[in-house]
Length: 211
Image: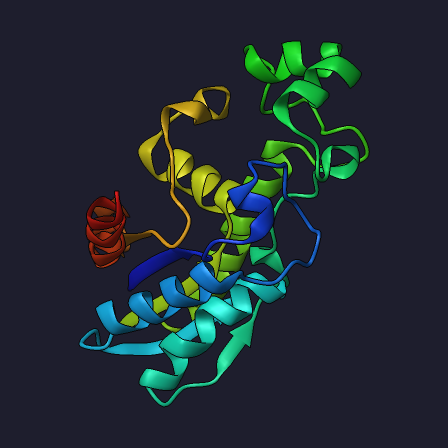
């Protein structure tokens, strides 16, 4: 199976650099533009199924892709973003001020096992996300599948594929509206591309022209 992992487009919360987990926020105008660019970049892929997190920002990113292939978006709860509990909507500085002990563990070697206050552990996210991919794989052993999901879901999945300890998850970064491609064979998984944002280059060119 060829798996295209897609992170949803921009929201106002992402733009403001606030912590975003299960809060069901919409894409902003720029995020909707990114979703269209993603759909355009994937129009020539032989996508046989498209799955999404149940959150609005993921569904709104998945729908243009599905529409261009004549498909219906299938929701899988396992693709939902990490439950970040009391961190929701906070700045990094606020997290440090309110939860210094958590932040110390999170930035150290215990990141995989330290639950967000009122939320999940990275280990929990990785396990349920991997189960979601396995369910998809059972249904679609051959061909190409797209899965629209979230930052921590994608990062923890890639850590597993690359054999990277979850405590080192910050070595990976996945931008909004970026895509990564995995070829999932029976014996091995190949990372074909990672954090691809080439389809958004028109936006960068426009910003440079405006400045």
